[in-house]
Length: 327
Image (cartoon, rainbow, N blue to C red; front, side, top):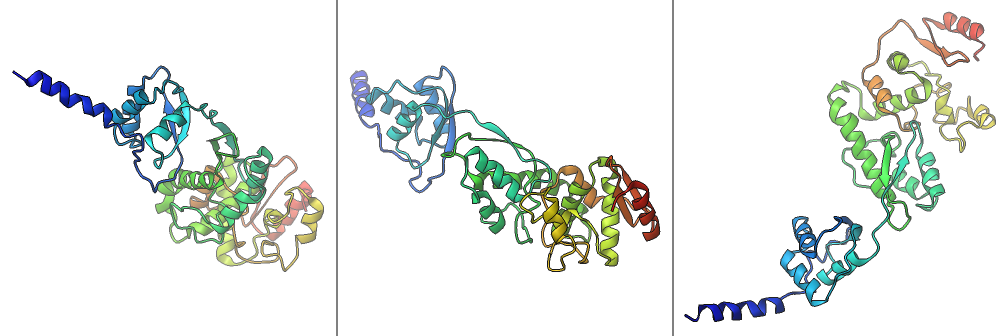
């Protein structure tokens, strides 16, 4: 009999209970990219925020929009955080959407310093920022890296990244590269390492990346490298001596360090592997390192057209040098 008035009275204070200062997590300051679909109503946006754990209540979000007469929410991507109040979140969604991500390509074989230089040239980081993180390993590692730096584990790929310095994160890019390495290589081939350590495999793969341009001969080169490592003669791989050069193609600087006994990367005069990878290898180089092809060759070189020629012994290798004019 009095049911209808009672229900209406009960509904009245609900709108007054909207809390514009509600926060999901005051201690979570991480930036999250949230996309407002084109044509979405305030109620729909509230539902999406609640489903994403970005507001505690879609209803509360909608009521705050009504109370503050907020009708300016814009379609597109917005940077928000869980420590924002509902009112701050609504206002953030009224701001201009952030630009769409753009591609950034890490080329095969690039060193940490090469990636750093490319990012600094884009204006996304200060010079040395990426390198400092990668060399110190001051990021969240998805797997153990025993080497002194992350050289070799920063998977070459095209990554979609924010196109401005305010939102670009060198740390986030490094962590994505490491996760891509894990997904593409380690999760697939981790059980195939045998008695080789992951570090050694990555270092060998980085040399293969620089030494052998064709997929066909990469397993052959891998077999030669592992065979020489197992029998202790110096590898004699000139690419390792270029690693610490500021410019890889600097021939004058290269000749200066080529036979320097103090150069830890000089594999003409030092047996064993260099301390780190000499760049970041691709999938085919990594796979060749874990699946080497056994041949009778102990040496190899490339002629002026880049064609592989193996040598079964030192004499045959010297004949190949003379034949193809490679010294």
